[in-house]
Image (cartoon, rainbow, N blue to C red; front, side, top):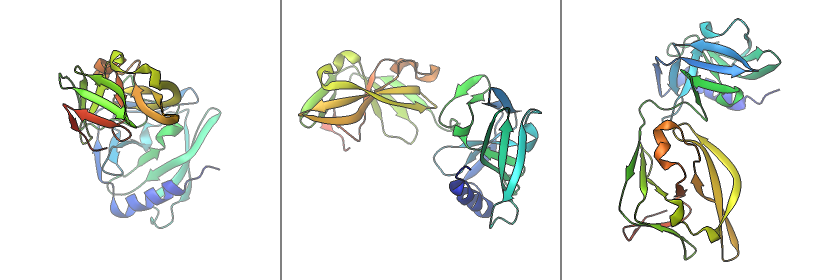
Length: 251
């Protein structure tokens, strides 16, 4: 049986306080489970459960005839305004589902994003979580010098970086691969997904006999809006020392 303690706490919070924000979106939203579409709607909601980014909540009426959505129990403390549920399709199912019946989330269903095989906005696959419609990314060429060091050893240096500026986040500096000192790097098995940039791969740094995990990432095939960073290397600001035009940033 799935652990739903976190969903229960979320449902209790949303039933009593409401979401941080909720807005209907004109995007067509679909998701696959077991190789079939579980729902298909142009009336999904962006729901900010917290201030940082939204999740998709979909109407009860959007589920396909192949999908079976069954309420399993009322969430304690919600006065029947939130129910745990099970979504089944073919030979796959998930119990990480909540059906809401509140003023702001009436007849909307939250499905844990990671439980579906694949989500789509229109015909474009999305990963990790939905994009925030109020967030943007700017990728700007620059001639400001960037130097990256760790434990007193310079790992990269360039005067032709790309500045990636993402709403509400600190700047990231993407450096040409020829500016990196490869002798200090070894490939990592780590992979992460960003809804704005795509799948990232990582390198570790090996300096003075010590391994520093996942200090730099790169995108081989970024999604269209972030295409300029393809093949460039971005050192994790919080894990290394970075100088911009000779001025050291705080980690």
